[in-house]
Length: 89
Image 1 (cartoon, rainbow, N blue to C red):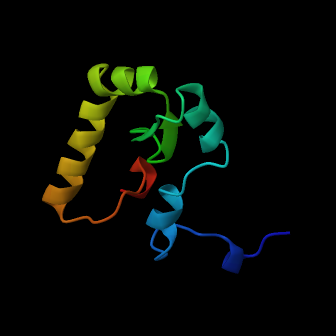
Image 2: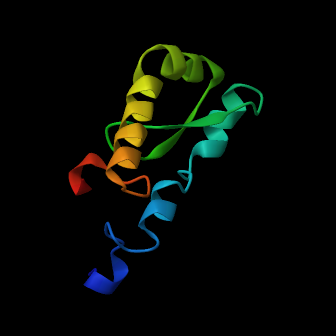
């Protein structure tokens, strides 16, 4: 059973770090492209996910990257720090 001290919630110093921690399966994704990989931050939830080179191209040129940049710009203008999700804004 989880208690409140085991949950990392928005506002906790470890929250942003937790969002940027690679998923356990990132090495599998890296192996698909011969260990060439990248991480893309999902604009919907703020989580970094491993992507192949083809998925990176889609992320960069398919609009997700631009959406994420807009979110970062908006948060910067409002004086918010961190990489949190939309729900905490």
